[in-house]
Length: 355
Length: 207
Image (tube, rainbow over all chains, first blue to last red; front, side, top):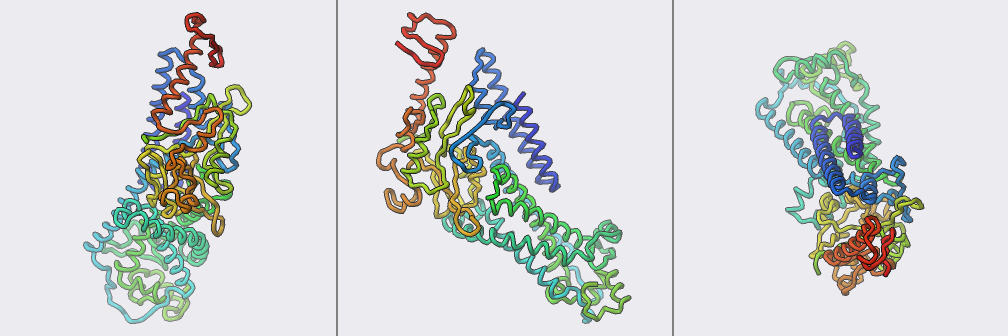
């Protein structure tokens, strides 16, 4: 009975925290694994109880150690635990949470993250092969319109480069063991990963700061409106039909907010892991790692889509962020409402990029 | 030597912390690192028990399973060791370990984590056996000298046992049988003459 009470408490604990991030796929796998872990735990407890009952033995030691294992130090079981070692959590004799964390990381996170990332890449390749490059239908007009100011481009590329470096070093830690160590050996990989971890630890907080600057730089024009709803209903004009869009289309806005929100989750959980000297317990670090990894992988998968659309998928998109200027016909086709606004203000040829 | 194991007998441990001191001294462990510690449950209450805990050298070690750089290895004796040259100080082993064995020195800028340090069963590390480098990184290699871990050797009440798993479990099994017999005798009321001894509730058997 005690084991049951304990397990249901813990399942809902992870459930609530995870559902915050609503990454349905990975969440589902995680919950499946947790519930099966606890089912096994319950079964074992029941067997122990049955054996004890059959023998007519009531061993106080069994109950004591079971309580220790289930970490009932909250006073309800009257257990206290002390030690002379003064590091945090040193008085904890056994922490069974680590096993759940291990099972999640090795059994779910690493394989399913690999499936997700490879799956998204394959889907993009498939899309490119079927749909081909999205060309400017009317051809290039040769007339340039200012789309991004130098400061906007600086912020975008700072965040982008940091994101790529953090993404590479992060996935190195996640997949290196199964992907790289069999090829180059653990000693060489350790050197690379050690350097990667340093980069990750130091650039992470910088990414957080740049993300905040990005929020303020691009928030104007990124609030959702009815046009975006229509844009999504039309599938972004992916199927040949036209979907109207302002300065940013629904997809760009969704990516912006995903990057900001998932990015914030990643930064907060990352800082907790990066500076573990504010009395974070091992449980806090396990949960932070879990959140950090799930949110990071999800954002990475989404970023593939963004990078794909911004470079190889669409003619005229990359130059806007590279040079700051886009072709007039590109603006007409992909951001018609923005172009109409510019024309109304008579600024199509001017340098007002903040419109 | 066969598979080696630690075992701490909670009926004997008196929380003297002799094992902790022995470990720190023998391996020249820096401040703030506790390869071994003694945990007391219900301190000062009826049913108080103490246990000395360090790395338990698991057969299916969680630390080794989650290590992203694969720096752990298990020796022929079943001792879980790690390579500090490969270790990157990520801390994953400490999240996974149920016993809190992995320790991290605070080194570098912003007190970032250094290379992980843990109990080696006094078996040194991957460096050349008996070398100064090995001692500096991993501590003593008593096993190579034919000795057992000092914590267990120093234990005054012989609560902490270390060595060949079969012998350790034999010793502990005998203790358990002796305690159970005496408890059973006093509970069921077996005649003194039958057993040839007079057990009491504390498990002591007196002639």
